Amino acid sequence: MPHSNGHAPVEAQAGDRRVSIAIWANAVLTAAQVVGGILSGSLALIADALHNFSDMASLVIAFAARKIARRPADARMTFGYGRAEVVAALINYATLILVGLYLIYEGVIRLIDPPEVQGWTVVILGGVALAVDALTAALTWSMQKHSVNIRALFLHNLSDALASVAVIVGGLLILLHELAWVDPAITIGIALYILFLALTEIDSPIRTLMLGSPPDIDPAAVIDEVRAVDGVADLHHVHLWQMQEHAAALDCHVVVKAACWPRVETIRQEIKAKLETGFGIAHSSLEFEHEDRAHKDAALFGDGDGRH
Image 1 (cartoon, rainbow, N blue to C red):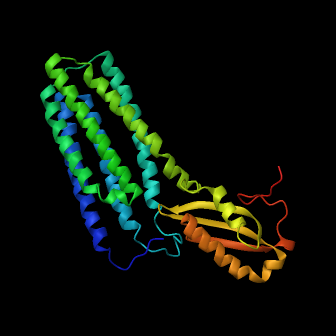
Image 2: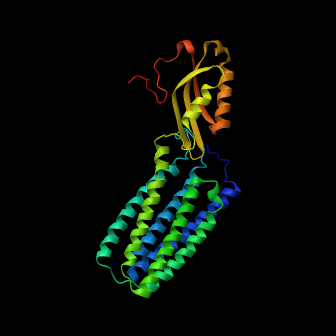
Image 3: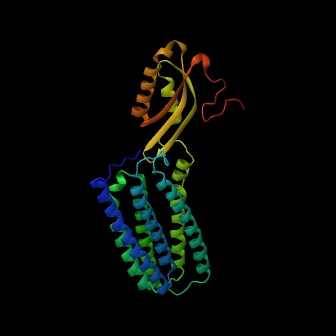
C-alpha cells in the first residue's frame, strides 16, 4: 500500500523531473511531426506523430499516477489510489487500438492512390524523432527497472525509435527511387506494430481491474502451501487478486482440524508468514472455521458452493 509522509522522497522527485522532461520533449516532437507530415504529405510521419502522442499521453498518465499513488488510503478510497494508473492505462491502450485501426484504413486508401511525398522533410523530422526517442529512453532507463508502468513506457520509446528508423528509410527510398507506395506501406507497418503492443499489454490492466490473480503467482501453489500447514484440514472461498502493481492480496476461509483448534492463532501466524515469504503476499485476510462447523459443499474459489 502506498504511504505518504507529506513530501516525496528525493528519488521520487528526481523521477518526476525525468518524466516531465520526457513529456515536454515528446510534445514538441509530436507537434513538429504533425506539421511536417501535413506539409510534406507524409502519412507515415503523421502515423509516427500519433504514436509519439500516445506515448506522451502515457507519460502524462504515469506522471499523474506517481503523484496520486503517494496519497494515503482514506475513508473514500480504503485501498488507496494506486489503481488510478491502471484505469488510465486501460484507456490509453484502448485509444492505441483505435489509432492503429484508423492508420491501417488511411494507409490502405493511400496505397490505392499514393500522394506525392517530400522525402527530405520526412528524413529530417524522422531523425529528430529518433533523437527525442533516444533521450526519453535514456531518461527512463534506470526507472523502468523498478516499475512495470515505466517499463511499459520505456518499451514504447524503443518501439518509437524503430518507427522513426522506418520513417527515415521510407524517406530515403522516396528520394532515391521515387517509391511513393513506401510511405503508406510503412504507415501500415507502424499501425500493425502499435496494435501488437496494445493488444499484448492491455491484458494486464484488464486482469487487475477484473480482480484476477497476479500473473506471477500460481494459485494452486498458494493453496497447497496453506494446506500443508500443520493443523489445516482444508480451505475454501479463496480470493487471490492484485490490489496494486506490487501488492498481491489473499482472503479465504481456513478449516482447522478439531484437535488443533486451540492453536488457531499460531496457525494464522504460520500461514501469513508462508504467504509473505513464499509468494510476496503481505495482505491476507483469513477466516477460520472449526472442522466440525465448517461450510459444507463450499467452492474452492469465489463465494459460491461446490455444487453444479
